[in-house]
Image (cartoon, rainbow, N blue to C red):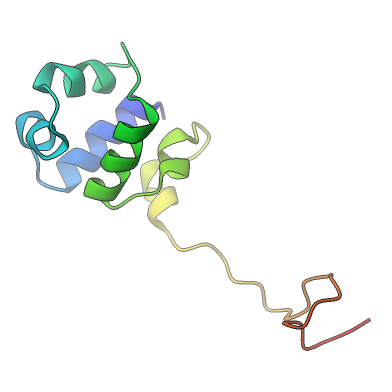
Length: 94
């Protein structure tokens, strides 16, 4: 999925119109429309604000290999408490 497709899907899931999201971000509706159409990209400040308002990470918005639903699923938790480094947080040593 492209950033625009993810943005549009996340906005709709949040129950917001383009106009409402634009008002929350203090930008024009046409800017949101342009981003959703992949005709432009938000700058980093707007990208952070979008992620915050739509409750999704910036990384998941930018990752073209992952769908929005995959991005919203919690990451798998490792069952092995040893991280492979010699640090104080590890319970198991080699």
